[in-house]
Image (cartoon, protein in one colour):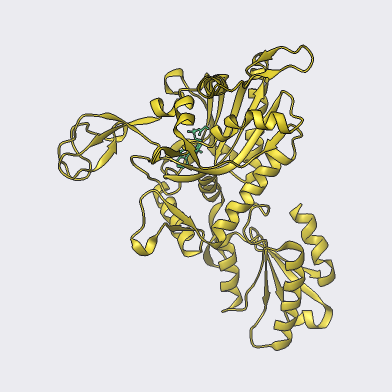
Length: 426
Ligand code: GAP
């Protein structure tokens, strides 16, 4: 049943232009996915919302954008050269590679039944020449800590945030967008005095929950887990994972880690640059500690789709729709003339469409097929409202506005549409 839901979501995502297999005409590439027009818009809206939520609305947050390729020294300092590995086993017959902790029988290949070799540690970083594609975006924030301090008025406590691509050579990419080899991260490092970290940890834990609600992830499907010491990343002294009930099981969505002074201290040693903070009052110099909330964009999209996916019976017919929050819906409003072959209706509908587009941007015009089909198409991509121009419009300049979730229609004067949508969208 649950696996079936994932299949339905993958199929809808492909059919409606959210997510395509990467390089599909060449047979696809395992662990890579492309975003179609609605998926790219959805991703853009989520990134915007995140940037507003965690960067723009905080005076003490500095947004940056750093490169995806970084030198080996960064990864030596960060500990990734040594520690960023998963246990791997290889089949001696078909040469398939598997995560040792995910195979049922440690001796037998899950694909061909051949003999598996001994488990060895496999580093997940993509290396190209003497540089690496970053497996986490956090290091961009650490290596620029001094730059941000020197070029802004930042004073502890403060955060450095960014959104960008990360790359991991996962042994077994799987479960649609859940485990891939190239993905976007939204993340910040919050620098503070050592004794203050528990209070910031708690504050950001609550903010992460508020983000989860605001992006439209079903909160009842999210569970906080205190990660035991032996399961934590090498840099973390405390980690709380936010897990989500995906159709394939309850697994990590986001993480919140206390990285202490690990990264800055290691970079100070490796680079020889003094990364200490000088207290403006006492002049005392020390290495700040760090609390890090991290958010995978692909997992956010997946959790949003799983939370929003709905089926019901509508007017005696089954329908599928996405209950996306209007703030992230790729299309906010669709405008239709009731029929295509009445030039007056089409002209009026085009006028309404152009005016709404000026204000809201993400507005679609559709005069294809019957009106029921057009509603269903918009329901499937999660458009919250459809505006229909009908015969009555030509008499009194009113239109119907249909609500996606209830299917109810209400009449509005065309002149009031903009104010109405502004009030429901903000
Ligand atoms: N800077 C900390 C860090 O990178 P992480 O738990 O290794 O922490 C951060 O990864 C987030 O990236 C995870 O919480 C998850 O949302 C996402 N993520 C990790 N590996 C992923 C993968 N292979 N595919 C998709 N998303 C992934």
